[in-house]
Length: 158
Image (cartoon, rainbow, N blue to C red):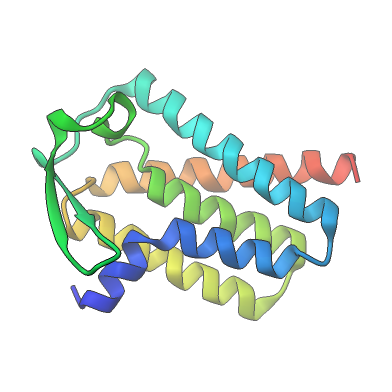
């Protein structure tokens, strides 16, 4: 996989989270709900990882450092949440943000940008064997479903 796409994929959740905050900043309540939704989504992911306890497809986890180094971290040295593979947290996060921002803003170019980064992130997780296709697919489904319900709860209170 191209190094630039690999970095975009690895840092996809953080890229989309920062872009989300930038795009919703003028709408203070939406800004707050975006932050709270992202945190809630992460909590849900950790909970499901402990419920399913499915191992990752490889004994090592590929980690990209900001300085450009690629590290293989043994899975047995990772935290309890990080050592499990289903649902993929990266995939769940990027698809949650993509769906939530689509529902909240209904802006085509933002949706296309977010969906592109979400696809790159999902593919990167499988290519580097940090997750199986199923783990990434389940993460994407959980992110989309949670975003849908979270958005409708948000709309009731605003």
